[in-house]
Length: 585
Image 1 (spheres, rainbow, N blue to C red):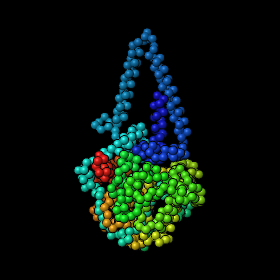
Image 2 (image 1 turned 90 degrees about the horizontal axis):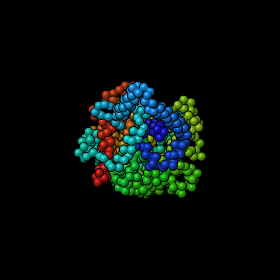
Image 3 (image 1 turned 30 degrees about the vertical axis):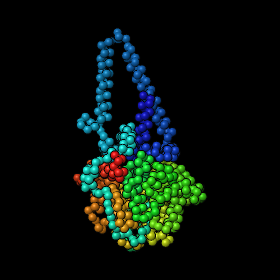
Image 4 (image 1 turned 60 degrees about the vertical axis):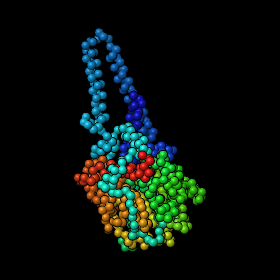
């Protein structure tokens, strides 16, 4: 009873804090504790959560349950050992009633666990019972949720995919996976392309931004703000109605760069297989030199070795930055070094390049446990009216979280400024997006904001002058590389899961119209409604400034969106199996 009681209360509290962090019930992402840097994660847990209080509550609850059980058993023992002469007929009735009560309790428990007396039992996809995400996810039994997650984790490497015939049907219903394109936007001389996946650069944190008293952008502000409106001769373009594909760094990275729904593919039994039609391969085929830079460690998720397997020419991580830039040693932290040194290397490589470069980057500074570089002077944040949005009540920590976010934005802004004030501006495209929301800000009531990340692009004028830009265009991670390909390459084969060129709205083809949506594994946004994963009807929304705001109005779900998430996932797993040359199945 002690073990069971401890497990029940510990899992319930764990599920609560898991939801506060990831805005979902316990899911497959929990195995990042094993697959990622376990020591670093333990440090984050110790810093961010009341570990000792949680353990104390668990122990107290366990002792109470044990004591109550002991008293019940002791009373029952006395009852069973009563003398036969003490009203045996009455004892028999009491024992019969007790047995009947036990059987009834077991029956109710089975029915409750099954969730139904009908044909279909309670299943994972039945957890959506309310418009309140917290109720949906916290109400789910955490041990059952962990069991589901464990099953997904065990199955994910088996590539249980649909057959080819069903994939053909799904591509007719949704969109084709594989495409060939000839672009009229790209220049004669191939431009350099730099794409940065920024840690925790989420719309939920950016919703607090104010140049006057809560500056979260620093040197990035003029470029980011300039890109939010249509204007003459613009080079900056910012898409704010934009979603991350997933809610963790590893799954978002795998989706963007490997087109893979398997977040641990670089650790799996497929880690030595070359995947066709990754962005790295598309650019290699176009004559680019491909380089990966991270301010973190290349050993994270075995990325360094796996990227080399995928044909990347060079991988540079914090180890290289520490030796190449001695000043970076002062900023060494749990995950690597400060982002500015990764940008410094990228600028150095661009200036020295004798051939077009495709550089893709992963930043790490804006990740807990937060460490603000000593040389960076954070703004004075006015917390009045903003404290309620933070998950912590510690003002010093609020300022640290905000300061590190500003530092990360500022470092990217300085990189953009250096490129724009040099000869590189004429032949270099820069793009950046967040890997997922900022987990230190609580905005689960607005799913579009909770899972939103912006996409920013700096584009040479020779290319930008031909673009049709709509600031309210819907997009998500699926659209990043279809857009970059169209801006930089002449003719190419590529693949995407419903991706499109975000500047193609003026010439809407049937394919472009079918891909006019933003997708996250927790929700879908179309021009007409928001659809949470598992919901049976959509939610109408309004666009207020930079953000999408849900209303209370419900929208009947069009037939083509029935089981949309299931079909998307089936098609996604099919294309991965197909690209692994079918022998993976």
